[in-house]
Length: 402
Ligand code: CTP
Image (cartoon, rainbow, N blue to C red; front, side, top):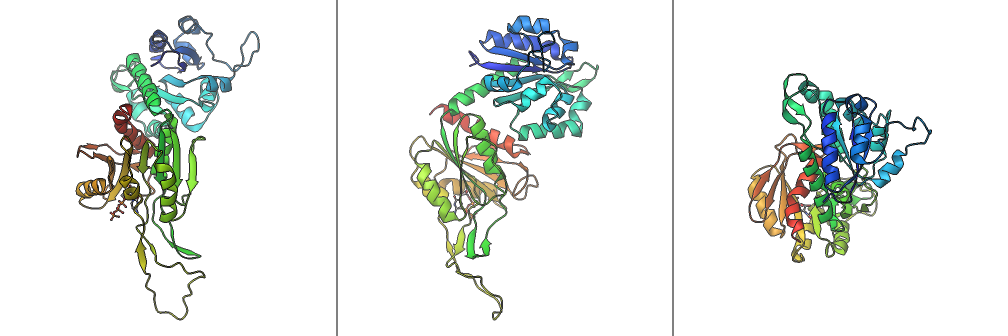
């Protein structure tokens, strides 16, 4: 998996830096080409000479080479690399990465990274659980960084708890898993619906819902970061998609969304229906603004919108994977199973409005994935980007077989 891969190994100044030498050796042994970028503090813990000897390349630390004045291009590194691993990542480096404080070569390299970035934190247990560190780690996760969670055990301070950098073998495993998923998803066509739909009543009013589009967009960004060819069909949302290669089609109503989906779905390998589609639309749309004067009230006649999931599900080809969402307030599992069957889905992602961490406009979600065979996998509350990663990891077994 790692043969021929270009890896930037970022090392910051923590005692676990000594383990970075072993990590580097493992990566090289697996056939990767590794360029080390080290922070000034990192050099206090491990010498560039050791790292240069192991990697076979001069170590990059300063913006300019002291003897020749040659400029070290972090931009070129970003173009060269297939993966950047920051190990160990101290609390300070994580904080700088999360907030874009580009005061050393490692952070500028991170900010120019076009490739996936993976971070293996290492620090004392109190530093790890400090709200500031946790906030920064959450920010990195939201930005799509893979966190190799620290392990529990003896720490340099003499205390014992969570904060030890994960063992190099485990970091290599995480890198291999990343490339395996990448390989599986590379070139796979993924269609995602996201956001609400608006159903016009007159030129100034509509029927809509609270969907922000965040979950659908997070799934799109996660698929794209793993090499998939992604199309998002989005209802009216106020958020941007980060992911230059994602194709985005903006629509307003359920009918438009359905029309656009039908053009793309037949060709897709994976279809994720994350939009909160309005089930009904006004039977007639007034051409001019409906006036208040002269009426005591009004009754709107609504007609049923197309069920996009069911329409696409009915035309599903063997080999395609369809994933729906079910946001429920009661009888969650039963309702989700019913939808899964009626819409001919392979998986349904269930979240409950009774859960404070789930639902519209939130940055977090708490899901249970239910498969067509009835197996249910429950996950804890996580950022929507992390939830997206869990969904794709769960589908991954299926994708690799196709
Ligand atoms: N869905 C869809 N088109 C619709 C309604 C729903 O594509 N007109 C999709 C949603 O994107 C989601 C799944 O179907 O993936 C379930 O949506 P939900 O609104 O929970 O289900 P409904 O079938 O509308 O049932 P109800 O609103 O009665 O719970």
